[in-house]
Length: 236
Image 1 (cartoon, one colour):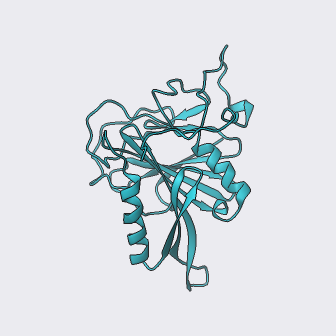
Image 2 (cartoon, rainbow, N blue to C red):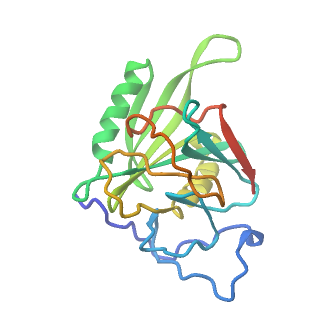
């Protein structure tokens, strides 16, 4: 199985929406053809993306970017983009040089969802194999129900990008396509430091380099869906 092969399509990747978000440059950076997410070596220029450290996130008009913080260390542990009634949570991790993580992690996520009383079905998606899960949730009236979530994984060169789609985009094809377009234009900045597999790659607030601080114990991708909690919001 090809771990790091790029998914090609007939036409070049679509232009980002919201021309007002573009940087004022004499020439637009050259973008590779095909479909990402991309490695920083493939797309070295920031272009019309937000620099969040390990993740460079495409700008979209009307979106909100929320940086999720660890409640104890205050370290940024995930980025969540809200668009209309949909959510896209992103985390990037170090991965082995010779193999990917997603095939192994899919089984782990499925087992944990089932253990928590939910269900998860594997299917083919635009980024390869993914999980469509129904996670236990407390309904407004106090009863126990469930909420859908899509777990998407992308194995890159020495990095792994995990995406969780929730909200309207789990049931509406048009909303799903909008978040998939954003995910396909993400750039991952792995860096050259030696890191153990599953180590969480460093994120920082927009325009603010990360400060040295305590690491989050264990770098494993979490099952947690985006939650209301410690976060900083930037409206686009």
